[in-house]
Image 1 (tube, helix red, strand yellow):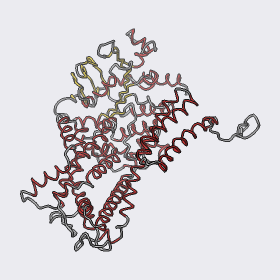
Image 2: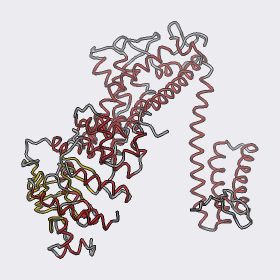
Image 3: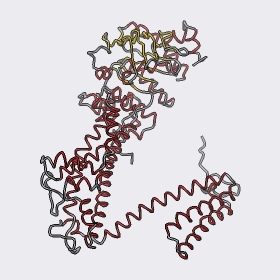
Image 4: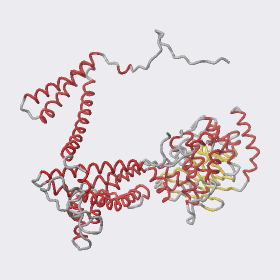
Length: 362
Length: 278
């Protein structure tokens, strides 16, 4: 038997073939048209921005964007005919909207970093604000007490809202009882509760009645009211995506309903459930009104959730941002930046933990 | 062995075991009718599944075979609009009587589905053993169970090096053999298979069919299939289901596989097994 050795196929000139991407080759006229369509509106807008009194925002929205649309349309029409025009409008819109939203997000983060960085320092993270007043220079005091408070309050809210929220989602998608439409309706209605109302509710039923004072538990309860519908609805959407074949498969193996949910459905939905929890936390962590009413404020560090009033980052920001002392305002921005970093850390941590044992093959 | 030879041997084999058809029936459907909402989809199905035999359910799509097989281990009732009349007797007792726990029934009457459904959160090994965990069975020899059932399902040599990999990494055909191993691990006495080979390549299909023949020494098997040759190769008995336009499905003819394919009594059976419709 003869063996056949593999030989690279030769093209007509006898050259060894190299990988090509022929679909990327465009005629020179096309490249020119695209370049002109990009450059001309940009140059006109830049000229107007620098040499005319028209404000930049107006140049961008009223002049640059329509101009870009028209220029791309003409370029498309010249190179590809009438059919190209609609195409170019959609492409310009898609790219424009993406750039716009990214710019908004980046400028938000940028302004936070620029203004917050001045206050940020190690002692700002761990010191509390006892003996600190708005005129105290930035070398003293910090948000340690508020960080502890926010973490404590969010932890309490999560302990309450996450189990109830997931249980609600399980009721809707797995138990499928008779009350599903009503439960859905109430969850939906609950997600419309304004945060200040949640705070007022806890204030009136728990704090004003003397049941317990303004503290981390009261703040956590108010947060839980806001968190619950987000967790429940997101978890419901996630559980709906789990194919029914898994449930029937488990039941066909002699599994009970409860075991099916605990050992098959929820583990299969793990990443989604973690997303639901994160969205719940993200929903509440910056809420100020409920904590002003239910948790109060404190300059010192409080650890006991059942104790006295407790500080939190949103309330700290609220109290510092509107005073006529630059250092206090800087502290507020620093606290806002710290809150963003805290959220980023929390989310990264949850994602890493959520990766789980059963990974893809290496 | 060529297909023709294989069929010949299978024929001879089924002649030999035709005596076994007289064995006491393990599972038996009596006057089973099924509805979804107001629509009746199955009418008066009477069929016997003798112990340790393979019964093939054949018939065109939409004639109620899959619906029927799901009534045999009480998966039918999971569909909210489902209704049922008649009775299904397992070891002489109606599985739909009010004192019977469906979980208990499903443990003894296992099922393999048309679409492979391994649990994505578990490893290959975890999937095989999932039935034990989910049903709360206690067994010590987990390694033996894993090896034995995966061998029976024709998957052992392909996965023995990576039992701790995610089940989702397997190909479709491998996943199907994995769920067959999973169904075997709880040692059911009846195994229902709803078109188990429709997603498999010919080589895997042959492995599964060998597995079915092997298993039929200890397990009663009911298999829905669209593949006539498969029915001939694996089944002792065959039942032909048919649903006329707008009418509920029913059994047109049933009996020994050799009779159904060799000398069918009904013209429609003859047409169907010869591929003239459906």
